[in-house]
Length: 631
Image (cartoon, rainbow, N blue to C red; front, side, top):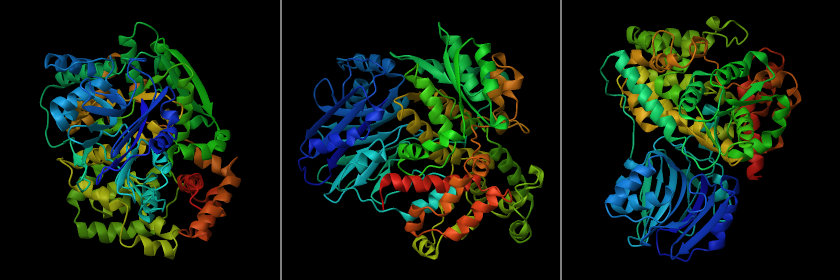
């Protein structure tokens, strides 16, 4: 795992200042503390920070191909590199190292952009072909590894693994994009189609760019997508056997490492499944770690301990409390852009715990998106059934009217909190799911924003790109569309961003076996009943893992990695909540109604409403603005 950065002139191949590329890489030292390198030529400069995982001494970067015709900087792991190496050797390729980096170079020289389809793994890389004078930028299928880009005033394109790499370049435009603030308030993160700064952008998951000197910058090209349009046939036992084979293959391939390896273990279905399959493969006890909370209703550490006992793992645990909130500023700086998934805090802590004994850790991320494990997916499937029998005019007029006047009523039992359901049913399927997956709905955002900001935002709404993505999904059912949107929008924007930044902040490589693209493509073709059956999501996965895990692990209610910020803001962090409403940075930005925010703070502290997630959003926006030194 590593950090990459570089500069490319699409017009005249101007000289590139090596020290500038070096400074960009130095901003990424946490991603690669084990080595560094910079290479420049007319019109191009590539830089690298290395975290040594495979071929510890033999794969420094930037790396040249055996014939000197191409050079690469690369962040990630190719899990089938040994198989590809054998195939390429038979085709005449020569290799000087034992790692996966040189395999990418040889694959490019043999197959060009089509080499991406042969790579199984997580990656973001920049490859310069000295003969063709082209720069090839590519990102993996699901977006496990990030890549930021910026068009600069001197005509060059800069790129880096994180925004902080671009921030080290003096020509980066640093104006805040107001549409990114709209996106952030809606989702709790800045999605892949946007960057917090106007001068930057992100290469989307499953896309590449091929840039040439003397030509206008080419637009990104999508090289991979997942389809829910087909249905696999077969008996449940046969499908379960195929799934188990894919799971074993995905886990075992991600256990290849020349450094100590372990796993995150929450005690839920996904991480427990990964640990069970690791234990089946490993000749020594698997090293596992988990995080608990000082709020018992949210603490899953006892389940993690039970799974650790089942497989005799070398298990370690640590507790997160409200005192960890003091690190909110440091947490914000990991992400550069504002990022409000509060589970980033315990994720960071579990990465710290893992890094004390290992350099690589396997996680259970991806199964909820692929196998329909989120409750919101189940509710959406049911709501789509209701939408199919009720006329749209009735839903908009009657249910929408009821939803508008129905109190939010956070203090009532869950079945009586009907406001969100009524508003979702009044909307289209895409609009309803956007409301379910979002954090701050449009009517609340409109109350928070100042007239100045509303004028800047204009007609744009954060939900529009999401709804378009969902509407155009290669899918058959509402459940299909919801899962497609989760995989393409939520997963790279929230989950994978969270894991990448928090793990890389402590120089830990996180691997996601349940995001093996063969597993994802298999799950997308399963009949709906094999994914969601009654109130049970991930049906086939749970049935398959019954040979390894007890029912009280597989079928207990889903809890998720939830941080008790609402309780903290009413207790030990009440003063911090009030400080949000008087924060100098948000006030200076001029885009918020600070009086309205103050009222929300007091309503939350008094227990009249639950605004915990919104307060955390505003707090992390404040900390991000401070970290970027915008004012």
